Amino acid sequence: MKIIRLFGLSFLVGYAILLLFSCGQFQENVSEGKDNLKVNNSIYTSLIKKLTGASSPILYQIKSTSVQEDNLVSYGFNSSKSGKIIYAGGCFSSSINAAKGDNHILFIVMVEGNYENCSIQVIDAEGNKSDTLHVPTFKLDFSAPELSKVRDFQVQGRNLKMEIKVNELGELSYNGNCSGNLRKIKKGISEILVSFPSDGQFSDCEIKLVDASGNTSEPLPLGTVRIDNTPPILQEINPVPEKIYTDRPSYAFTTSKSGTLNFKGKCRGNVEKAVVGINYISLLLAGPGKYKNCTMTITDYSKNKSRPLKISPFEKLGDNS
Image (cartoon, rainbow, N blue to C red; front, side, top):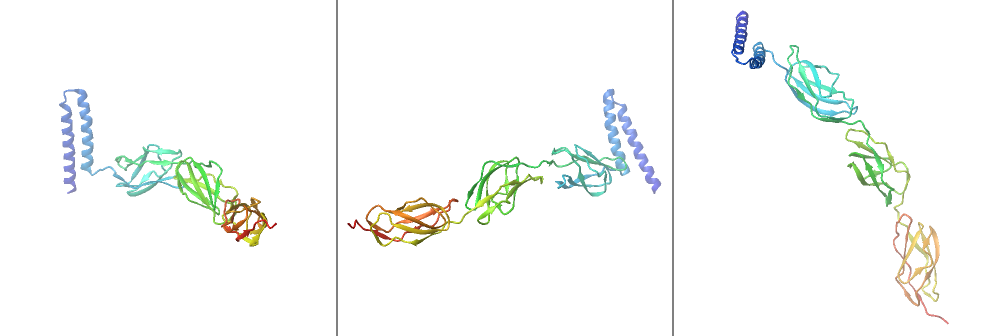
């Protein structure tokens, strides 16, 4: 049976050669005959491969490109046959042999930029070359992003309001005893709020930017930030007597924080500021009458405002002369 099969195969090959040769003889134009001969040779080669069972490797993608932390690019493909790998388009790898089945390789690229024309082929032991398998476009970025402060920050309660500038989009990370309202940030200038957990002085807060390729910027330290979000507390300790004749009665109170005084109602104070602890002041009255609606507040130097302190009611009598 083997002899009969071999004879049949030889007959078919010989018949194909005679057929192709005869097609080439009856061309009127010489140049056209050469072109047809090339086409016929290609058909002949394909026919021989089919008759002898030879076939080119078939490739298809099983894993898209992925940039690793060390800037190597992983890729996966499947080959129907084993063979040598041919790289093109600016990509190459230390893997030179493809196995039959799934293959996972690492592209070694040394220059950052966009890689749009990478491709691979596989040549088997008989010299059959696969069709080109195009690798999906990928970007390689070695450069660290840049992060800077645009202007001085403003403290608002337990938040710090500031503007920062970045040269590429990425994700912010907050290090130290602070946190931020914005994580993902676009290229350009953005406003952020940095929050602190309590009142006090903080010197360890810094911000970093991580870009899409995993590159990290130099840290942006915020320096020393003083947070004061506690309002002052006022308390009356020496009220004005219920009935008085003077236009400048004495008044005493305590405050938990220093700051600026503000009066409302018919009376006002002879000073504008108070210091932490006990304060003795004089109330300036508009004239005789009952004073029931006088209040006082204090605003500290972090702009925290106390609750109003109602001054105990009193009556200013007329001249006793």
